[in-house]
Image 1 (tube, helix red, strand yellow):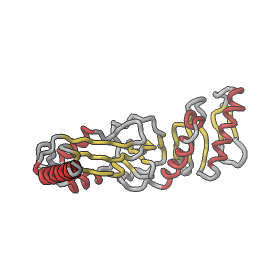
Image 2 (cartoon, rainbow, N blue to C red; image 1 turned 180 degrees about the horizontal axis):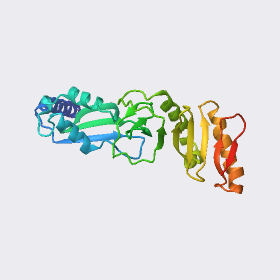
Image 3 (cartoon, rainbow, N blue to C red; image 1 turned 180 degrees about the vertical axis):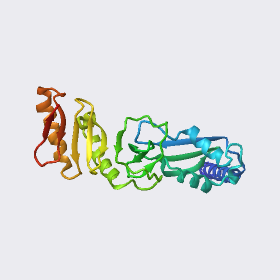
Image 4 (tube, rainbow, N blue to C red; image 1 turned 30 degrees about the vertical axis):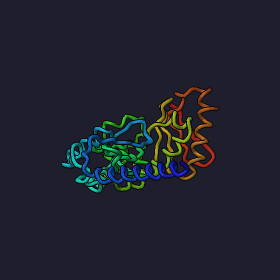
Amino acid sequence: MKYVKPIVRIMLSITLIVMLILAFVNMPKQRCEHIQAVAHTQNESVILSQTDIETLLSDAKIEIIGKAMKEIDLGEVTTLLMNNPFIETVNFVHFAGKKLVIDYTLREIVLHVFTPNGNHYFVDSNGEMVPFTMKMKDYLMIVNGNVSDNFKPGKKAPGKIQDALALTRKINGNEFYQAQFRQIYLNNRHEMELATTVGGQTILFGSMDNADEKLENLKTVYENGLSHKGYNTYAQLDARYKNRIIATRK
């Protein structure tokens, strides 16, 4: 009897190995029954969903559902996705059972840029230009004014847009700034102006030089000055000078 248990273990191991081999051999003959698209995003809006992925594959004449797994070119699927302007990275494309799993990370959209000619596009957290889509519902920082109309998806945005992006990162990192400032205007002097949500003042911000100090000075003015005198008292706040804010009354 002492040999029975070892023999049983050996037989079970052999059976398991045979089953795995059969599954591996038969898997390519199986047909794909489902696509599972898994999107990762820092935005609230998912601008490329399961339905969008299925449409991309269909438009590219790449058949997945009902096709034998061995006949599906995973490299072709990956290349298609990598060329999509809304996708930052394709994490993996592989089969799990009878379904094709597509795991990808979307670009983090940060800016909504409006050009003087009436065109508009997005800029992601890497400073690259991204096409506009109605699927983006997030409340983004708006950039307008003296903006280049030379839109090239996937390319770096112009230098002044990069400055606006750097300022937006600082604004988004602080609850007070984020609640107060929602628009950046690039004037003809290539300087940034901020539009406010309360009071309606124009804020001359200038360049990114001493940006942290400028933002902190503005916060002090709003909390210790305008909160007492009234947010509608001044038409303009000039933050371009070191250690001071110059206010112009309405």
